[in-house]
Image 1: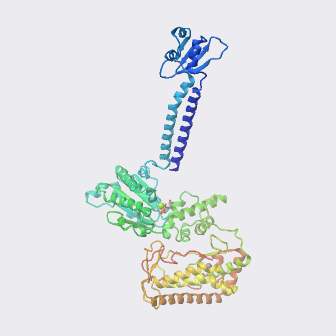
Image 2 (image 1 turned 180 degrees about the vertical axis):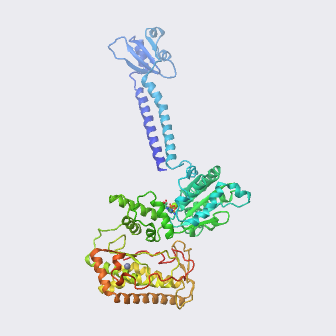
Image 3 (image 1 turned 30 degrees about the vertical axis):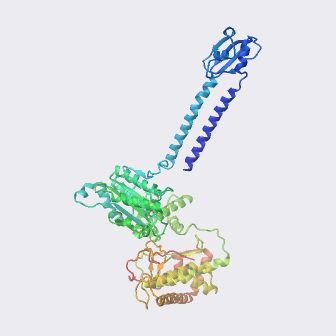
Length: 636
Ligand code: ADP
Ligand code: MG
Ligand code: ZN
């Protein structure tokens, strides 16, 4: 819109300038040398040789050729002769003067007479350009009600299911949609009700957009893509009319797909106060529902929508006949990640020793977008190092980069801080190594990265879907290792452990209130999360237990943490010499990899069986919901 206004102002200014030039020119010509009455007098005195009439201008040439030609103006309404007669010029006197009526080209006149219409033309031209410009700039800015959807005609598909790795269940679900779009008759003949809407649900970067494009690529049908936020403009009613326009357009191209990305921008629950009771949004949403209800069995338009906040979506969207298909895109598991790695390393020169399976294991919690980013970072690093191949070094470094932001070698660390960090990380690593259910230590470093002063990386052998009580208990000790080491070695505790303590608190509370892992309390869930805890978000808790149960919970949580603390302290006291040695080594060389770290222990292996079989205690937890299920590196 600003563009529109700017053009408008420019056009007006130019038009005004041209008009005023014309006006001034016109006025200048009004300044004449003689009044017509004076001309008459001079004619009567027989001073005049010739009068040249050109329009209303009268040029007076005198008999005395030394006198300059003077100019006068006659009135436009009557002829020069009439006017002279009026001023008492007799026919004889008049005949003594040559009168020439000149209708030829007066160049100035001509120019000006062209210029005025020209300025109008110019103005119109500007208007036209401005309209066109505004339209090109924002799709159809001058037609607010038109949808801004981009259409891809599906004839040369750029994305197919082959480009989407991992997400096998999701692809299977969508395969049906593809078949329907390819051969609608087959389904209609059997009286099958065709899905109208498919809702893709998943964390950002899990490939929702990619999958929707793949569906259209597979089916070879047109694909209208629009983002939920594009429906919403500053004017009420625009969204609704855009929806009408979009669906109308889509029906013309049926069979086809409408893809509404980030539908939560319009599809938020109405009347919750969440995101406001926004009138405009409500109207837009209603219009989408109306259009979807209006689909006949022969419409063959399928709406695919994507969101990462299904918990805030209006329940009306989910009703049968609307988005009744729901496809959940999970964070990929280890095999999924390996497959995605394969897709994105396609065509990139990898060193032969690179093991994608191992890399997949080192990237728990990564989504497709992270993996794409990781591979790209590695390629950039390799190029910067003038290598011909991307090696393990670059890939592993990029894992950490994506996870925690780039290494900050430049941060100035005082020697005492360095010592503190070394002990802290050594503490984590040693406890993590000794606890039977912790994941093997992959790397210990005191090089700061992102927000962390140093970190210990543990590499899960496989993704955990179920987490046992003993693993939680060991993880508590692992998380407390840093703080305990500080206390033992430096006789002082610092704020360095605050994020560890946060984690400890979370694990312990969840064990008691969500997973029923208390010895004393009934195995049930205490407190209802207000929003569906779907993707790790919740908005607060509804307390559904009494004050005495609350006290009981607190006591149980405290007991868990204190027990873990004591266990950690005992362990590190027992391994005090190892703690000193590891810390010294860290201060010396900053980073220890898995092998050099294991050398600090007799025999080089965990004293306990590191692969103790896990007991499945919790049912149906997903990655996001189970803390410790995706063991993040342990920040200092
Ligand atoms: P979302 O829409 O869920 O936020 P996108 O579809 O935009 O995520 O994914 C971003 C990028 O991540 C994609 O362009 C793709 O390169 C990569 N990606 C995500 N998931 C996958 C997957 N399953 N297989 C291959 N690449 C993926
Ligand atoms: Mg997306
Ligand atoms: Zn720590």
